[in-house]
Length: 167
Image 1 (tube, rainbow, N blue to C red):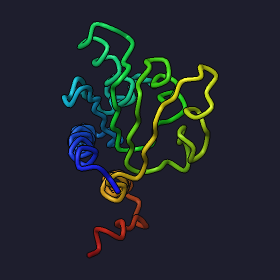
Image 2: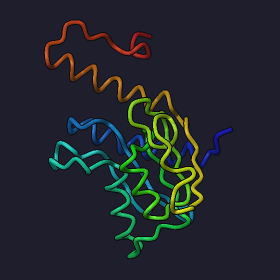
Image 3: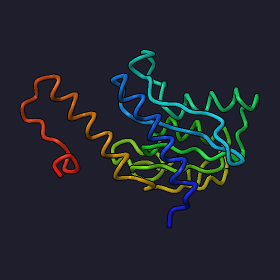
Image 4: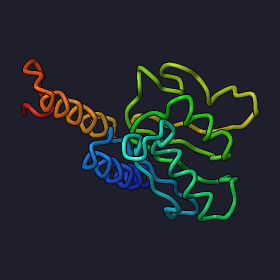
């Protein structure tokens, strides 16, 4: 059973993903919470910043470190709409975040077990709790809608709307 706080904070991450969508970025959003309050937010800015590392998690980790004036984010929970990639999973470990909650699994680049396992049994011997699938359909629906819109803009007449948009 998903905790109501997990739903609350995933909703905040989804709002960040919507900001990315509006900018033409892959809609992935992230918030970092410590002691019941949001200490950082981030959304994908890879295209905007022309930076392959400008993932939502990396931006949020930097903001959280600035907020706390400490790179160690022990006791913090990172909420993100898509399972972190290996790069982001490594940054999560390095920043000592205690828990990851993600929306949709990523069967192509997931670094929390869907494709590659970066978090569990890590070389740093850090114990990071992982909870996946929180509001997964809503998170994935946003990504599907984004890519459908991009294909339609490029004139791909074979583009079909995601099933959830047909209802």
